[in-house]
Image: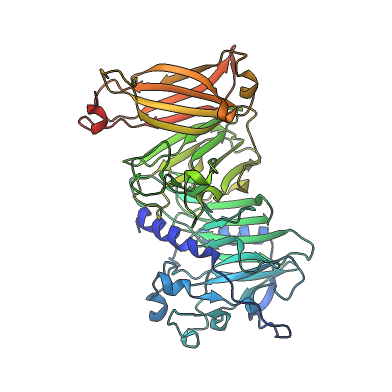
Length: 533
């Protein structure tokens, strides 16, 4: 499967993560629960790592299965109508805060995932049971399905709100979570392999989940996952703490089967169709359509970088070389409803996702892939950490990191940050244009900017990789108690070769803002923008 097809199906399918639960059983109705298979076996993370290492030393076999015809034929609406029964929820009969419910196979999900309940250090497999699902208007007859069909994934809910899940794992190694806003948006993955290269991307699968029963007073759910793909096997541990900003503390151990050219650690996957800085696909009635509007980087050297996202005409690949990064993430900084006008999916409520490495990750790069898209059903943005050393067969690669899901990341620059990037035709209004140029207006707020208005000279520093910048200015923007940097970029020729732009504000030799980076692709010769002079 090509990446575009895979991610289109993954994006659409994950909308189903918010499926409403069936009403809870009436008082006095016994909990049916799920059957267990075999006997409980000792289990911990070390044992899972051993299992992953052994798996990597065996030949790879695809986990995709041919499903029963009725399940194989499900369309979107039919699959949506299948719901997990509340009376079968895992831990529903326990006093803890959380419950787990399971997704059915079908639609885009053809790889059964084994589920285990872990209690007191022992794991026991949970049996698939057609009776655990209400098949709604799907046309599927549960009684006719094989009892060993298997599950597709799971979601977590609180005991006080069994309708809405706060985290869900479904499809390949994809998972999502929400903060207090309660709105799903971008996704994360266990691992990315050969993303954005000239060959089909490899999508590893989580093939088994081990859900550890939390203590009655615990706010954290621990989930273990076994990963497998043609190139690598791996073991994962997720400690998930629900809250205003949801925290996932992740540890992973990877065991390559083959040499891997581009390994992506802590991959974040999002969507950007159109926004204030990129109107190439602005044919929708809504002003902006995106799950994230920028990549934020906190480098090992302490520099803060903001890279606005875009929807380029061709695949675009960026590499931000670093050593022991302090953090990175895909953020949704613009949280103004008026900028989206979508009262159905609420883009202004979409969570940001911040990756905080644990320990030293060494040399490598944060890599950003932007893929053209014509609509919002395709996740076209990927960001991840790529170690400089290429993984080799027989190695054990250990990584630890924290994922923060919510409106604001926990790490914030003390400098002023970019809050908007606007672009359009350059030149001076009212004067005849002698040549083509493109205007950039970049707004910064926070830090020391408010205190400097009318009291100090603030200057914009602009650097371009090709061509030249002109009409550079920085002036107070009192509406946000900040400053607006404005400048034009003049391409050196008629080519569409990209131009890299770097900007920050300073005063008296002191840096005032994070570093704004941008990649601009000039329109081709003969394009309407180039003829307006």
